[in-house]
Structures are given as C-alpha cells and as structure tokens.
Length: 122
Image (cartoon, rainbow, N blue to C red; front, side, top):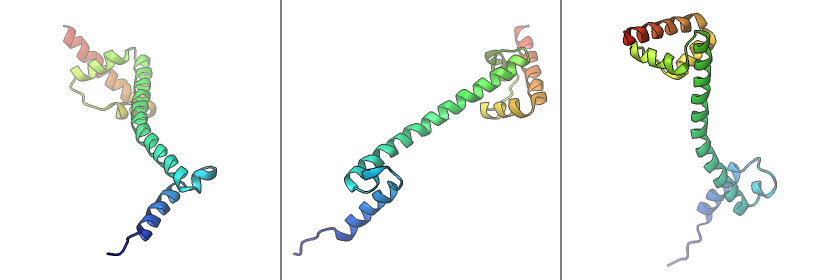
C-alpha cells in the first residue's frame, strides 16, 4: 500500500491559517506555527468579546434610560417597575433609543409608569 503524505490537505490547512493571520505583525503572519497560535488566540478573544459587547451595550442602555428617567423625576428602578405595572412591554434597547431621540414620547412613557405606580400603591 502506498504511503500518503497529505500533500494538498496540509497545504490548504496552512494556507487557511496564514490567510487568517494576514496583517499580523512579524512572524505571526509568515510562520505557520506562530501564526496558528496567534489565530487561535484571536479567535478565543473574539468569542469572549462578543459576549462582553452585549454586556456593555445593555449597561449603556440602562445608563441612558436612567438619565432620561431622572429628567422625568423617576429613578430607573421605579420607571421600570411602573412600566411593568402598566403592562408596557418594551425592551431596554428601544427605551434607550426613545430616550435619546424622542424625549416627548419618553416622558409619556414615564407618565404612564408613574400613574401605574400610583394605582398600585392605592
């Protein structure tokens, strides 16, 4: 039986790694062994940072909602509790967008939240 040396497959695999490492500094873009480590590390960071990006975005939305709610004389937690009591289901991303772009609509939401809290207390 003839010996198989994986010629084309190995070349394809290495070419894929080296093209992924294009633009890296020094040997990280030219030497397969070093490039493989750099690409693996970069992919791990990319996976981790996609989750970090989601976490930071949500945090930013909450800061924006809180700032707009404070203008309407409500805290963030009271505002969100009031929306829940008023059965207004809107996500934080949309609320933050409304707070930044349309303060008049946000103040109407704040009034609805305030009245729902007052009804709940009574």
